[in-house]
Amino acid sequence: MIAPTPSRPFPIPAPAPPQPRVALVHDWLTGMRGGEKVLEALAGLFPGAPLFTLFHFPGSVSPAIESHPIRTSFLQRAPGIRNHYRRYLPFFPAAIEELDLSGFDLVVSSSHCVAKGVIAPPDACHVCYCHTPMRYAWDQEHAYFPDRKGLKARLRSLTLSALRAWDVSSAARVHYYVANSRFVARRIQTYYGRPAEVVHPPVNVEFFTPGTASGEVRKWGDYCLMVSALAPYKKVEVAMAACEKLGLELRIVGEGPERERLAGMAGPRTQLLGNVAPEELRDLYRGAFLFLQPGVEDFGIASVEALACGTPVVAVARGGILDVVDDGRHGVLYPDWEGPQALRDAIDKARRMGFNPLDLRDRAESFSVVRFTDRMKSLVSRRFPS
Image (cartoon, rainbow, N blue to C red; front, top):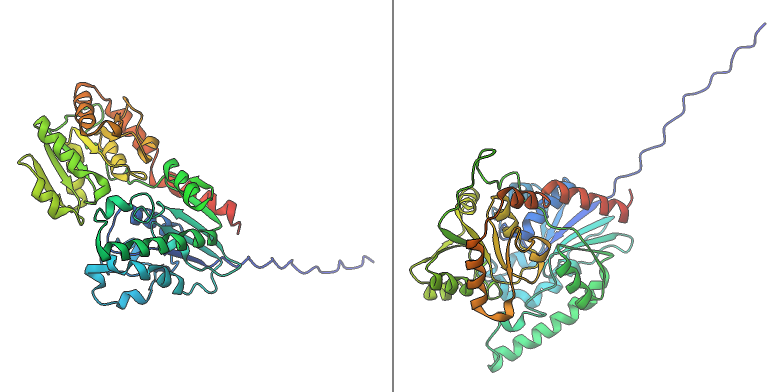
């Protein structure tokens, strides 16, 4: 008689490890600029993750960002915050530290001001995508605040001095820094004493395209284009003066605190267009014969958007643009220490050169959203294996 085979219970699969709780942190949500485009891509990596920020103006950023639960600081209720939020700068460190991140395992901050200083739980991993250490608190203070006299200037200097001290001390709260360019990685090393891995920001090259059929010859327009916040370090007036001197039309997209001053300087060939719809911006890129960038940028997403539309770039040869443009192939780079004449010479040089739109487009595609998300996903998985 054959003994019955003892029954074996089916093995019970091990329970899946719990998914880490992820928190996103961004300085503030007041409009869709370069930092918010990066945040949008980061938010896509962590669907449903709550987003912590100092303050949020509903409707000012994309639906993809606003689909996340948004949690704000006490500054959300501050008087006049919508129109005068820059005046609350001394309160930003306290406001970011007040945010409650209890229970989160992974904190991903997108920081150009104070977001990196958020206080994460002691066992959490904090990865910071740093757009740049604060320019106005570090190397650009004199450009942002040229008035150095009087009691107001002295109080401002004391505020910025305290902000720099906090900025350095809070830098230690981040476990891993990611920089948007080699230029910013050097700034992080200089001011925070920390290394940073470079992951270039995402550019929507699926939307920004030349708009020409395959094999069709690109027809350049008759104007130069700038896409920029109207801030002192952007050196918009340098581009305005250069184009007026050369008899060229200049169209400028963007808003900022310098608008009134620049409008008073503008000649008949300069158009200040303000903010425009994405489709109009794409048409402007496609119609320009040169994209101008006279200021030193940490990266310069607009320059890549221009290349994606088949428009060559003329830029000062410093900053993040060195990660984007190969001089003579994708545009012309010029030394800024030679003064405004250097930009005029660079524009003249670019006008005499022939650029291959396919080279420009190929370069832009290396900064695609897919490439960004793949690199960030790989980096986070290496630093925080789940």
